[in-house]
Image (tube, rainbow, N blue to C red):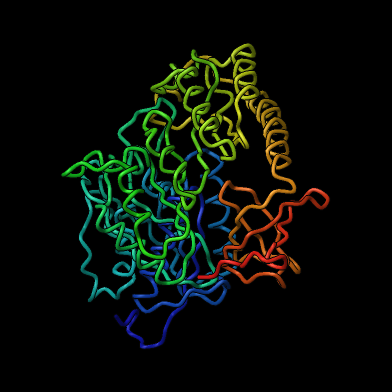
Length: 457
């Protein structure tokens, strides 16, 4: 396709906010733009198109998107400026009112982004249900019943591709805006996932990360129905796949069969991220979470007993309406007793249209900040204790493309972040390393020098 009536390749700049699903979406955006004749650039001043793939999970996310839009527009006053993603889906009018923004595309529209860049005589995109004819093109996601398979990307300075296998959510947690900006739950067919993973393995990737908005619900609406553990089992049969990892899974949809698979196959990374949100049952009920803390504890303890070296992470929200100091202390005590290796801690952020936004007993922002800091300190202690368990032990780590001085960043199957000297390994290599601590950082010392052969693709 000739874009803008010229055979010259125009350049685009892509900025991404938010979760791993957004990262997967941006990887697909990049491929679609390149297939449409554009070339990605890291220099925003050199681009004819600027794209921001937005997040809207908190007020701060919205603010950061607006701040970046203003800064990028100052650096490049003439480029076509597009905002897409969750913020664009939730409040397109607010973004369209920004003078910096030329086009607001919803979640469905971003899959056809190149069509919106065509000259007027070639502009033949399907008009969505909500548009103003000039700036806003946003579809009603409640009508979406399918998910488009993301295009495959080849190795270009990145490792660990995130393969989106599921989209949307049918749960209605009282604080969450995600179902409104991602639509109902829907899944990619197992055949398409297997084909995509096979292509990525063929392209040279060592680790594949499966991701989705509500990953544990994968396949529940497919005909015939397919469970996530069944898909993982089939993916482990893909020739050449060396490691598979799951992103966040809601505890109410976590199959114990996943523990069985991880216990019997070392290619299944022993790393599970299970969002808790609160360690107080009163708060969990107000959040409309479909479990109590005893059920959550049973799941975490089973993983820990079956896979003692596994990393178990969680999300915690503080300052939810009605969370008293005593209820917050319940969360502290619960987390302290659990074998978590790290926490992701967030302050509650009211989102218009959610029940929690209009609840009484809202927590002051200063108190939210205090509670966030308490749990982050607890997270640091738990992470340090988890890391220390593996000092002197040998684990397999994947070297990434990120480089700092004479070291590659690396990641073990159980989510330990390491440094590996570049003279001992190449990027995107699975290597056996002995874990040591130097200062505050963990280092992986390859054991290939003492007779253990490094694993290469």
